[in-house]
Image 1 (tube, rainbow, N blue to C red):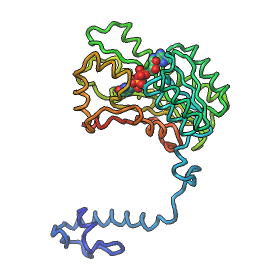
Image 2: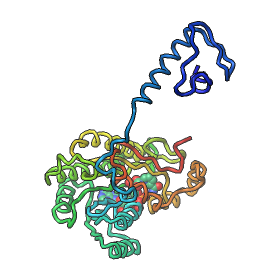
Image 3: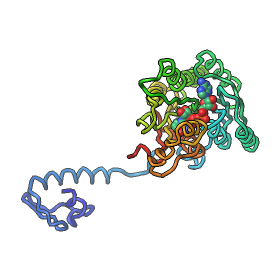
Length: 337
Ligand SMILES: NC(=O)c1ccc[n+]([C@@H]2O[C@H](COP(=O)([O-])OP(=O)(O)OC[C@H]3O[C@@H](n4cnc5c(N)ncnc54)[C@H](O)[C@@H]3O)[C@@H](O)[C@H]2O)c1
């Protein structure tokens, strides 16, 4: 029936179906249709034609609609908070955000690693942006509240973004992991994500932004989850880590729902395997995983942290103005098969 509608010469745009109520033959395909089938086809065809001819004029646009497309990815005139910003993925993204125009406040338990930190400082100097480091344990609720509020107060441009990368991993068989080890993973990876996000939301609302639900004027949070929140990693005993990352992606959905009307978009980013200090430690402990991980990627390789600059800038900028409560999977196709 579909073939008849779209390809039969009698159904070319603007032409009527052949008259009569009885069976008819599609002249292109040779298929014979009953009278009933023809009446149903006539109905849906008229609906489609009506909508097509009724729709005239141009598309409505958002307030961002007249901005040149590349400007959607600019992060100028704003400050972005980055947890886990002293090394690894967090520091790489902090560097990229500085280049894209944002001031960055990096929070971490560790002191920043060199020479990556100095390189990020140099990028900031070149771009006219600024990079600050604040020591912070994301599981310490009081310290998080104070540190985030301080950043909102002292930033030279409005705080409008959070990239939450602080996280830890632990390989332990589910039969052997101790409750305190399980809780530590959940505490850092999931509760930490919640504490930092909630402190961010409170400071955002306290600054009177709670009604800023206008494209281009709100804030964006990107929580680093993992493809490991969607699958069990073959060969790795890490139930606590994977459960925590599934929780992070779900947290983004719920916060997206609660804060959509307050001008805060909340999404998660789910990377596949990245070569960082965290994974190097796993590879050293168990060299066989490298071959396993590589085989699982549709691209036949692991990623490097720089490959998440684009996705992070997308999630934190106006380029993703209609995106909230989503999980952006960037995993070399690992979870596609
Ligand atoms: N490396 C990967 O393959 C991979 C894949 C998917 C997701 N991730 C996630 O990406 C994020 C960054 O990982 P990475 O590979 O860069 O690891 P990393 O160990 O190099 O960086 C993690 C950072 O988080 C900080 N951190 C840990 N606990 C903290 C706490 N309590 N308070 C504040 N900071 C704390 C660490 O000091 C470190 O600087 C993590 O959330 C990780 O789970 C990593």
